[in-house]
Amino acid sequence: MWKSPRQLAEKHKGQPRKASAMGYVFQIPIVLCWSLAATLAAPGDGSASVTNIFSPLSTPAEAIYENALLVLVICAGIFLVVGGLLAYTIIRFRHRPGDAGREPPQVYGSSQIELAWTVVPILIVFVLILVTARAIYDVQGAVPPADALNVTVVGHQWWWEIRYPELGIVTANELHVPVSESSRPRPTFLKLESADVAHSFWVPQLAGKTDLIPNRTNRMWIEPKQPGTYLGNCAEYCGTQHAHMLLRVIAHPPGEFEQWVAAQRQPPLEDPQARVGREVFFSTSCVNCHTINGTPARGTFGPDLTHLMSRETLAAGAAPNTPATLKAWVRDPQTLKVGSLMPNMQMTDTELEHLVTYLLSLK
Ligand code: CUA
Image (cartoon, rainbow, N blue to C red; front, side, top):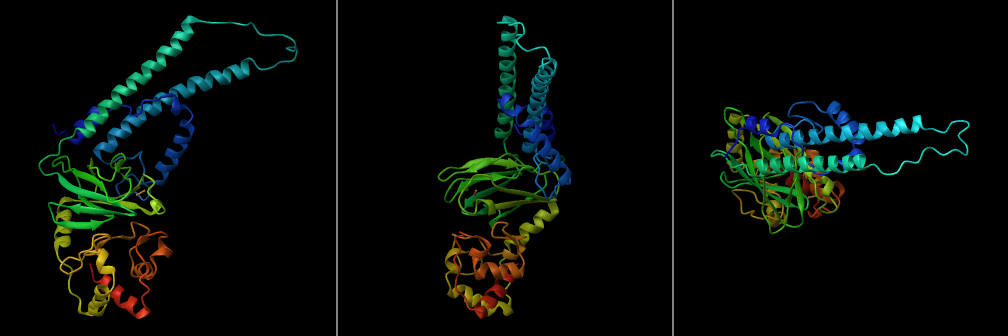
């Protein structure tokens, strides 16, 4: 059964995700300091410039957040009890003048205490396992509603191919989706695949991580509830430029999303100014790796360039998509992104100038 965001949020209230409590004890001060810093740094809306697992804006991320909070609270309790007893003991039984040569009373064995510190942790872990399993089942078992958007994301070294099979759109690195409103829930269901090695799709405010694995299809879903840009990244080490395999999800109000779809389905406009650059593109190997709709360019090794200039970033978030960075990128991809599989085409300055004029016309 499909559940509304509110039903799911109600269901997940106060449920933990991780099964191990003790492991967190030592992480609590670090996590709390970090979360405080992240919360202060990030605005609470969907346009956060710093991504933050503590301000979820999508149903699966909310389920994870509620569970994580319960785990943190339980661990904070354990930390306070253990730390408090330790501090008390250190102070109360510290060395005093006149203690030399004396031994404190030696006490061995207490069935009650031993029973307590065995049973209580087992109960805590058992509760955490149950609520975690229930949250996983709720998120993974969600059935797409009739008007859910279906998107296929393919991980490549080091960029994201994004396909909308029902809409006939192919783009890269920037996933555009409609906002899901409580009056009309419209989640986006993702099919995750990989063209080479294992990657991981992670947009912290929208959902947990899910791997993209060669020869396997994984699934996940997101349901952003506020318009805005949500930042994410590849979360599985996948080679030299793993850190520059960035991702953004742009959530549009419904009408605006339809406009984006309509614009992406158009073939690029023929700009007479870009004619020479177009010839440069089609006379070099660019054409073997990239697709441009409405032209003979049908390569699929690199990103689809049909509407290149509608994207905010270049090279999977390695740089903003401006004429200057685009030019630097084409001149020598290795300066911007060492190890990138896009070769330096050794173009003359004139060829480069014309080619960039053509790329800039792909709006
Ligand atoms: Cu792709 Cu890390």
